[in-house]
Length: 354
Image (tube, rainbow, N blue to C red; front, side):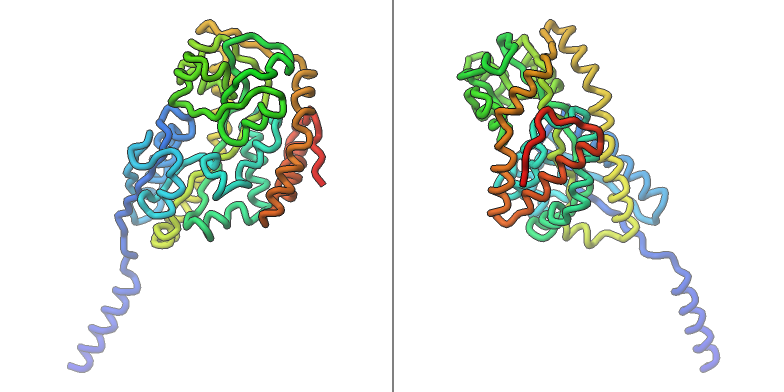
């Protein structure tokens, strides 16, 4: 009996050693306050979620299912960071622009206007900064309980108006809308900045609350602003990478390692696609605006230089302000200036930052 017991125990041990690892059925809630008409949200539902699901199925013993909610179905645009932080959702895509107090440094490209208009270059530049300044990712983990899966590029910002203009002085005293920090672009140029939001942009233009908007072409199309603002001027403020895709850290820590690796892998590919998809879409959107009757034009480089000169002291002021708050403002802005040049961008004015 003792021999049989020993043999049984040995057999059980061998079976245990060779048994397959426990397979998990994983469900993740993924959301954004923005609708799927936004490029980055469209890529969340059209690429990130299905691609991660597919790779987990193909390469692990686990299954992954995303429960999706966009356009405010689960979280509002300004509440997504808190939604991920608290675990109301597991994965969120959102603009850091809605977190000026929590993440003031993450809008660093806005502090350097007239940067690259190429979203592929913009996201590469941002990634280089994040890789060299650990604070940029660590603050999300340490303070807001979430891990960064990917950065998100926007398309290039220009100026849409209901009047024709050809030089910076034409904007003096004119009410023009923007959001957050890009209002400073208007203020320094002599325009009257008005805080706006896309849901009320059409009515704001229609009723004369303002006469223009700092806007990328897809926004001018999707919100039908061309009906109220005939003129779209490619002034070239820059393509800004100031969104992110994050996952709740508690949920992340409970995921199998191989699933974590896939989410990071797909997250980086998603990051790159926000650049390439926006890059490919830009000329099509400009053509569509023209087809809808918009007057689309480019101004001489001298106008960009004049506008950039009006802003030349602002980046240093922002760097000093961030440094005083204990953040690596000077380091980040200097890096961004240098990395842009390494990637082939020529600044109309080389902002001096000491």
